[in-house]
Amino acid sequence: MTIPQEHHLQAVFPTPFHARTAAANTLNVWHRWRDYTVADAYFDVSLEYTALRNACTVFDLSPMTKHLITGPDALSFMNRLVTRDVAKLKPGRVGYTVWCDDEGQVVDDGTIFHLREGVYRLCSQERQLDWLHASGLGFEVAIQEDTHDVAALALQGPTSCAVLKRLGLAGIETLTPFGIRSFAFEGGELTVSRTGFTGDLGYELWIDPELALMLWDRLFDVGAPVGIKPMGTHALEMSRIEAGFIQAGVDFLPADRAIRAGRTRSPFELDLAWLVDFGKSHFTGRRALLAEQARGSRYRLVKLDVEGNKPARDAYIYDRRRKNVGVVTSSMWSPAAKSNIALASVEMPYGAPGGELWAEIYYQKELKWSRFMARCTVVEGPFYSPARRRATPAADF
Image 1 (cartoon, rainbow, N blue to C red):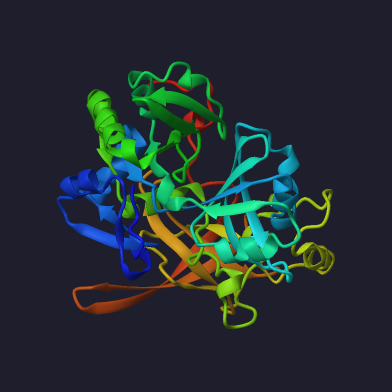
Image 2 (image 1 turned 30 degrees about the vertical axis):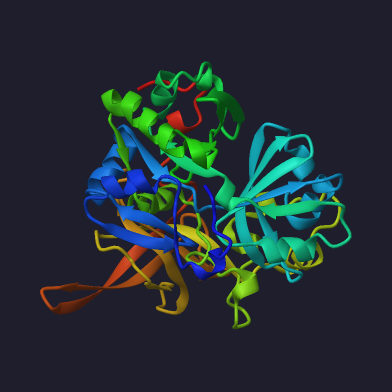
């Protein structure tokens, strides 16, 4: 994809797949993701979600911010930047991670792709080039945002592996979760990672923008017999809440964008303590996180099974004495879990697993607003996590 020299004057770019996504978007519902136009829904949100959980869907992932990190100090830089030990991430593997400011507050979360020895790609929702360059002072490392140079699709759902086998990717069923493998495709290279944001069996496909439309067409040709459909951001949002995945700007406020003190969260406060490795050398925020570990955290992120069927959107959370102790950050009625579910940030020590909280829910029906105090049970683990998500070899279904 050729980006004009005056790209800073252009408000929004089409993704490399836009010619196909525009033709498929019968609802004509779009939004701006970073500097790209992406579909919120194509034909029906409920049916797109149903296709994801019962067949497979394709989501245009191209706007995901991508940073290529290379050089002799690439590993040292990555370990200085993020909280997990990147030395344990071998070539051909992907790892989820977070990075913090000096106060131990999360700047963003994302995935590290260890493409080959000394070559990493860091993917995130937010643009991080300024933060990465500031963090790279003193390291012999090259940092380049290559979002425009890589087209990407998320192929997710139980028949996703079957589609890739039909595409001719020999041995794809043996790719383990968070693994990476490359294949020849139409004179170029198609990189496939067994990753995704849906909590289901799925893959992410990375390719040169010049081959993007050909990849889309081939996927839909071979995938038609197993129910492949396009999917927009609304259905993706449903699936990521069911999986218990957090989203920047929704479930936490990026620390480098916060205005008010106390509104940000640490990894411990986002249920991500497992990503903090104090056994490795210094990383940004380490001292603050050690202090927090010693004194205790202010908040914790909890998963709630909410009474009734009214989503607890932006609801306040109360204890049994009706003291306000938190707020819902994400919520929905889950078709897969057959339950009213939510993610919430609550004050410590509230929100222990198995504990009981209350959500103050307001909803409107025929111009009448009603208030409902819904009992909430704190649950552990994802709301929906099918065995096929982790099974290797992946089945065709």
